[in-house]
Amino acid sequence: MQYLENEPLASYTSWRIGGPARYFVQATDATDLVQALAWADQRNLPVFVLGGGSNVLIRDTGFPGLVVRIRAHNLRLETHGDEARAMVEAGAPMAGIARRLARQGWAGLEWAEGLPGTIGGALYGNAGCYGGDIATALERAWVLVNGETQEWSAERFAFGYRTSVLKRMRADGVAWRDQPIILAAAFRLHRDDLTALARRMERTSHERRGKTPWGASCGSVFKNPPGESAGRLIEAAGLKGTRIGNAEIAARHANYIINLGGASSDDVLRLIDLARERVLAMTGIELELEIQIVG
Image 1 (tube, one colour):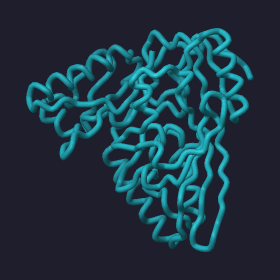
Image 2 (spheres, helix red, strand yellow; image 1 turned 180 degrees about the vertical axis):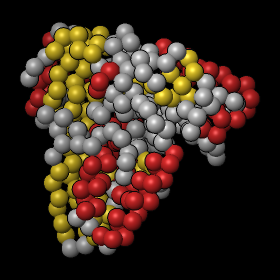
Image 3 (cartoon, one colour; image 1 turned 30 degrees about the vertical axis):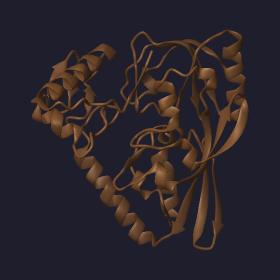
Image 4 (cartoon, helix red, strand yellow; image 1 turned 30 degrees about the horizontal axis):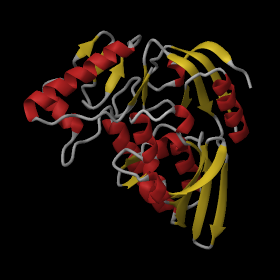
C-alpha cells in the first residue's frame, strides 16, 4: 500500500473540487482497509473513507488526516432457479453492476441505471431513483466495526429517505474509530426477460439524460422535502442560472450546481446558502443537504 502525502482530491470527485488530503491510500480489500485504519490510529489521524466521490463536496482546504479510497469491486452471484443473490464489494460502481446483472437477465437493480457512485456510497446514503432504492433491494451487508467484520441485516441500517444509520452517525459527530465501514452487500434478484429489462433501463437512461445538466456536478444537492421538489422550489425562487465564481445553479435542473471549470468549494457553498435562504424566505421550507461536506 502506497501512502501519498498532500494528494489533491478534486480528481477523485465528480464535482472536480477539493483540496489535498494530508495522506491518501487506496484499499483493494478488507485487509488493506484494516491496515490503513491501524496506520491512521497509530498517528492519531482522522479518517475519511471515499468511494466514487459522487455525493461529496470536499473543501479547498482539503482533509487533515487519511483519506482511504475503497477500490474493492468483485461481484459473486448465487443462483437458485429464478431467484438470485448478488454479493458485491463496496468499491464496485452501482450503475455498472446494475447493467452487468441485467445483461444476464437478473432484475432488482435496474433502477440504478446511470446512478453515479459506488455500492458502499449507495448504502451509506440509501441511494434511489425511478421507483427503486437500496432499502428495498438490500438483503444484508458486511461492515467493518473496530477492526472486525460484522454481518448486518438491511433493517439494521435503519434506512430513511436518502439516509441510513451510518450517515446519521457521521452527522452526529461519532468518532471515526466508532463508525462502521461498508465492505460488501448482498442484493435480492429475480429472473426477468432480457428484452424487457433492456427497455426499462433504456427508458431510465433516456429520462436521466433529459434531466441531467451538462458539466461536473454531484447530482442532487438537496433532498426533496415531503411532497415537494427541491429543484422546483429553487427554480421558483428565481435562482436558475445564478452564478457565483465558477459555480452555477443549473438552468436545466435547479437542484444541480455545476462546476463550470475551476470552481472553488466556497463558490458552491455560497450558492447552497443562497438557495436555502431564498427558499426559506419564500416558502418557509428549510432545504436539507443530500450531499456530504468534508474538510
